[in-house]
Length: 273
Image (tube, rainbow, N blue to C red; front, side, top):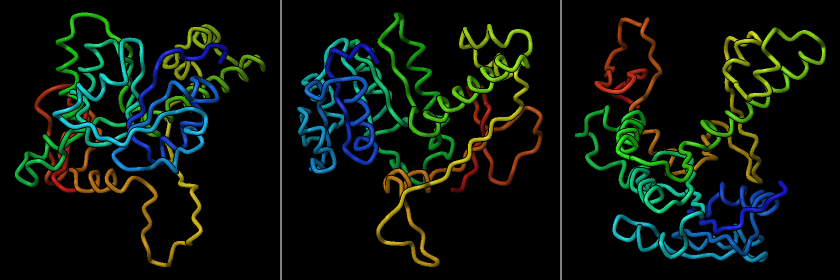
C-alpha cells in the first residue's frame, strides 16, 4: 500500500487476533506510534513487538457507564476503532462512532450482557438474528451518511468473503486468458460485480470449510476436547439457541423451532444449543 493511514487507531482487545493482526497493520497500513491498544488485562507481552515500535498500551475496560469518556480520550473524527473485544454492545459503540465520524470494524455483534435474563428470555431474543434486526432498526434512524462501519468481519463471516472474491477473480482471469470466458465475464471482473461474475462463471454453490491448523507443544490427549478459540466466545455460542437458514420452500418446522416475526425471516431458531 502506497499511502499510510495518517490518523489514530484504537484497538480494543489484546488477545490472539490483536497479536496476529498488529504486525500486518504496522507493515501495510499505519505507523505504530499512531496505535493505542486497550485491554482489561496486562497482555503487553503478547503485543510487545508493536510496543517496541512505538504503539501505546492502556490497561482499562469499556463499560456502559464510561464508554463515551474512554473512547473520547483516544478517538476523534477521521480516526479508526478496531473492536476485537467482547461484551461491548455493538449498537452503543456503533452509534458513538456514527455521531463522531469515527470509522469502525468488529468481528461480531456483541451485547453488554448476553446472559441477562438467562433461560427466562425468549429464545428468539437470544439469537444473532435478533441482534442484527436491532442494528438495522438503529440504522434506519440515521438521516445522514456517516463514517464507514463494518460489522461481523472476523474469519467467518469476514475473511472468507475476501477469499471467495479472490477465487472468483482467479477463475475469471484464467477463463479469459484461455478464451473460455462467457460474454460479460470481463466486464463483471473489471467492475468487481462478484454476484454476476459467479453467475457467469457457472458457480452454483460456494461451500466454506474450516480447518484449524494451530499447533501446541502439549499434544491433545485421546478423548480430550481442546478449544483453540476464545473461551468466552465459545461458551456464549455454546449455550445460545441453534440458528438455521430457512428457505421459503421449507414448509414444516423442526421440533422446538421458532420463526422470527419481523425482518427477512430467512432464519429460524431452535430452543436448544
